[in-house]
Image (cartoon, rainbow, N blue to C red; front, side, top):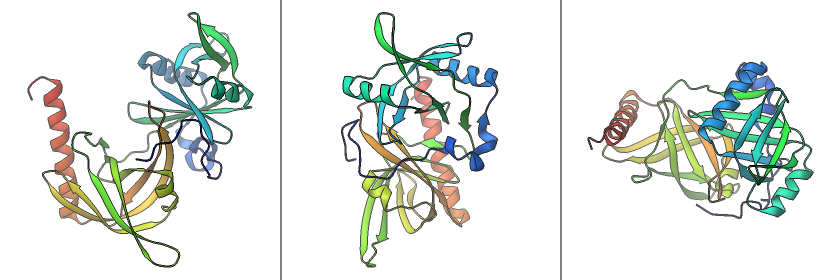
Length: 267
């Protein structure tokens, strides 16, 4: 994976987040203060890592929710590690916050950040969000692939001049409905939403080679704790034969069984 500095803008168009596309995701939008408060409190309790995007998604910092005050209608956020980025964030008129809770994508928007302190340390305060997106549209259980046994993805793309370009990526997750690819920004730019990828090869450890046709459904920029940036490219299986679907389900079942055994101390 190609690493970039956490706050270095990439040459790309402004990012549009799912929460901005209310026409597509209205059924996953929470607008009840009680429901939003419940989600925010869970993020505080879990100490979930949150990506805070500003400058139309071109810049971001990593933070976490420190506290929620429903009476004051505000929330408290940890400040970022880079002072220069913190200063940029304070100038933003709005900030998009994205994270996950129980493998469900969470997004909400806040207005201007204000400098404050929490426990003697720098922090941000901001107004309580008016809406929150809890995107849990999943027809299949999604398995995060093991880091120790990564699944490699290989496909052949066609450039504008029709010449072949072989690309490789790692699978972030897999389900009966499709896969999530860990792509560099350059690779993600070659995978437009709605695009079709034929003859994609994924070697599932101890199961065999899975060959499938995929349709690109969504792209979402993600930041790691180290500050590296990559794009999760969500792809759906298209007309996957039953025998290959069985291979996917066997792989998912086995990996999940092995994980549970390790957690219980039986492995």
